[in-house]
Length: 312
Image 1 (cartoon, helix red, strand yellow):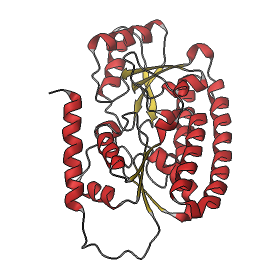
Image 2 (image 1 turned 30 degrees about the vertical axis):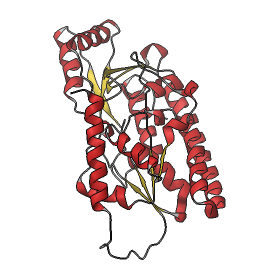
Image 3 (image 1 turned 90 degrees about the horizontal axis):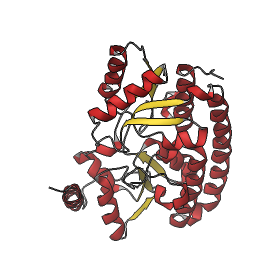
């Protein structure tokens, strides 16, 4: 069965569940602010910072959750049904859920794909022409996304426009400082050592913005397969370039990365796992990595430490 057909069936099933979950019977909630549901943590952070106290912002996918292969539980379906507004990244980051969100938007639900508001000139494509959805890896793009979030919130909740504008400006000032900080951290890595190999191809925008050569074992989606030939090519590169470290990701199984380590060892080159990076999900709530700035800062410092740079 074709992938598109499977996704269509999945979306239809979720929509049927949403219809079944409709209706009364829920307890009255004393908090009458609008409820906003956001898919991934990186976007949840943006919406929460800009919305402030004007709305209740909830994340759908928590730490360690892979959005590419996310399957909503019955409780998640109820949360989607109960949300007044939904934000998601789009460009098929959310896998099979994207069809559900598109269908909900056609039914006049307040649903917005924020990644799809960027001009095409900002987007990266893989060799098959698929758009890379990992836009948050470039802080400057996430600043632009933040502007679109402000505008969308203002369109939906115009009575809070001033709050959104004020919160947006404070948030963007924080991200502008973060962008400069990441540039400074990566600049400490010798140019010839700026080769980043990770579990899947999630760091393309990071590489473009901060001048790092990036390679993923799997493609843009973690549901793509890692071919033996590609693994062998990466091992060849690691040995030839004397690359000291490769990286695992918090939301992706580490078996393919460990296969690279073993393959290099079999050819007499010791390469280590340089650390765990946060790609498609942030860290645990209450930790520095549980915020978007902390996640990006952690990644930059981990990469710099493992590839010969300095932690600033």
